[in-house]
Amino acid sequence: MLSDIDKELLPLIESFNGMQMHINEANVAKYRKRLNLAPSVDDIPNIEVFSHTFSQAQSNVNVKLYRPKNGSALKPALLWMHGGGYILGSIDNDPIAAEIAQAMDIMVISVDYSLAPEKPFPAAHNDCYLALQGLIEEAESLGINTHKIAIGGDSAGAGLAACLI
Image (cartoon, rainbow, N blue to C red):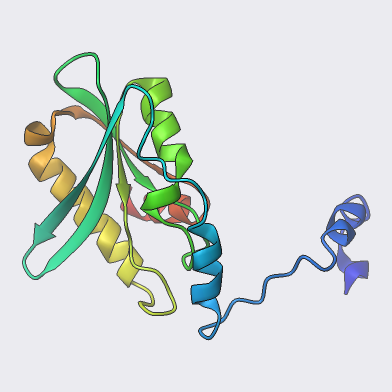
């Protein structure tokens, strides 16, 4: 099978020998627990962090908002989806969202989308779409400039973000 791979990539691929993760329904909780041991990102200098829920009809999705403490009343915003292969990751330990808020002086809204296998496709996509709708509807009350809203994500989150455009 390795004979089909570009010869320049073989050393890199072989260096991962023994580092395979075999995630399934029986052990996904174990891998999520390991990731949750990462430090919380709730205590970032000059960033206010708070939880919020967007609701519509009989659905709701939780988000974590990262808002710079200084600057203008209405901030540009980034709707952010964390990475994790659609099965891992969390808004509680995603340092990228906080770093973006701090570095760019914008509000970042990180979506706590549904994870597989417990909630299969299209649950995560629906959660992200609900978050986008809620963000647009509540932007002004959250201190967000409605003319400056971006969508992005990391890894699987980037795939979710692409589905919203």
